[in-house]
Image (tube, rainbow, N blue to C red; front, top):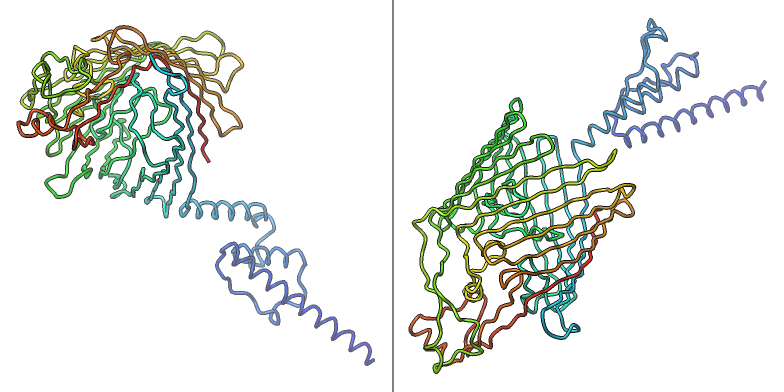
Amino acid sequence: MLMRWLVIVAVVLSSSTASAQTKSVDERESEMFGAPAEDEPDDEDAPAEQDAPAEQTDREAEMFGEPQNLDPQETEADKPSQTTLLEEQFEARIAARDENVLSIGGGIFSQLQYSILERGNPEEFPFSQPNFLDVYLDARPNKRLRVYADGRVTYTPTTSDALTGVAGTAATTGQREQVDALLDELWVKFDIDRAVYVTAGRQHLRWGVGRFWFPNDFLFEQRRDPLALFDVRTGVDIVKLHYPVESLGWNFYAVGNLEGADSPEQVGGAARAEFLAGLTEFAFSAAYQKDDPLQLGFDISTGIGWFDLRAAVALLHNVQDPFFRGESNFQDFDELTLQNISELQVPEQFSREDDWIPRAVVGGEVSIPYGDDDTIFVGAEYFYNDAGYADSDIYPWLIFNGAYRPLYAGRHYAALYTLLPAPGDWDDVTFSLSTLGNLSDRSFLSRLDYSINVLTHMRVFAYGSVTYGGDGEFTQGFRVPAISEDLIAAGQATGQFEAPEGVDLTGGFGGVSVPATRGSIGAGLSMDF
């Protein structure tokens, strides 16, 4: 009899201990999954007899934060299945995570380029290998709030940043830091009553419809190199208000431009209104900031059959940049001295602050199918720039005065291009052939690009370019003659010479002679992570 009671007590204690251990595990799992604590029945008050499957279902429901089924009248058909409960709980957890998530990622870009000059030792031709690493943080505390930051580190192991630009000139900025850190973007986004969307901070905002020229890109002072594999420009400091009319496909933007502003009067403003009518999109833009020109713009794009057509026009008023006119023999001198200065002919500087200066671009693209899933794209673009010059002889003088802008130095430009994505069975390959021409001086640049996507996340590039035509923007090197110390002193006294930005003429100037670039070859890779 004593032995029987000992066995019964041992069984009861063992069951109580197992129940307590199970409850402890359930609580920990409930906390791990974030389920709210539930009121649990006391084991001593629980019914003496209960089906084991029901106990297991209640414990699992409790573990995932679901209320226990204590209604004795509820039939098995009325109870949700355990699979349904788990699916609903999983969807709820995913929705909760989506509302409060921090994403970390970035990308890397590396490029290698060798330039071929019209003269000199090939072993001494410019060679450069810039590398860019972008790392971003993207936080979304809830669906109506987002914070984004993007930092960039540039690393150039070569001694100079001598990448040939679209002007075909291998001009180098000289020695530079191998490692440099930049802030590309840093902004916060939220909405006002779910109607107006505000983005404040450093961000990218590009306007216009051009492919090579962007006369309506008012907020970027630095123009994009259309043939660059990677856009190195960083964002601008603005506050943007966006009011969309989704039912019509319209968008309205108001922008406060804080770039370079150190007082309220320096804060600029911009606005843009975009409209949709059928297949046609058109927009009006305006921008102004103190000491900068007033800019007004209109752009339109539409589709007609296989053709995509686009056009844009911009008007600039109160332009503060200096303009020059007249003959120049600036490149004919090896050195300027007090003895030969009287023979120098330099352009006359004048102002166009009171003029309305137009810029316009018009272009089109046709998509031609040539297979079941293959299409070739052919396009053309023309750019008129009233702020440019018809004579390329003035370019060295513009460079000396810091007024030279590649692809915006001439008055008439044109471009042709062909894009061949994923031809045949080469689904990861893209070819493109582009030709840019300065019609004012009849110089041209043609470039063939090849890219392939490998290992899912990495893209490899290769390209080659040649320049040809008359002596002009794409084919002409430049020379700035040396200037003696005595001439500098005399020029400063009379105001005849002004040092260009970033050039120290103290003690004289040694001169610069850069041969034209006749071609370049390069390769690169990019990868997002």
